[in-house]
Image (cartoon, one colour):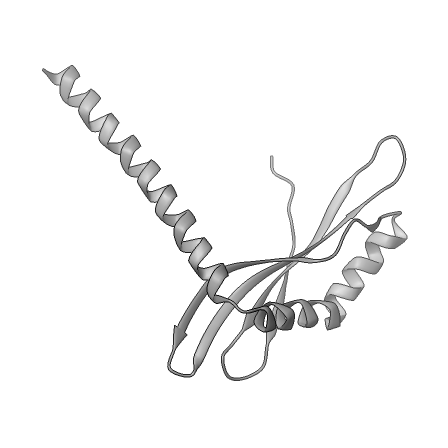
Length: 130
């Protein structure tokens, strides 16, 4: 009986985790769909105009990296109200080295694009995982 209850609880926990993951994916898709191209462009523009970002990219270029592609954006948080929508957008610019033993790195920033007011940016530093 205890084994049956344990199996049932474990199954319920797995089903809840799968359901939560599916809900999170649907919410992310809705959030990305509500963000219009203009808001995402504001995030990219703030990223490209940032002295912090420029410095970080230049340091990588000096180390032999080249830009791998265009900066990419992902809406990670947002809310909408009467005056418009407020978004937190992750902007990522990847760089890679050339040659046989390539290496890839990124300059990452969280950009807040408010409905009213100035767009703000915070550079995110990646740490190596142990």
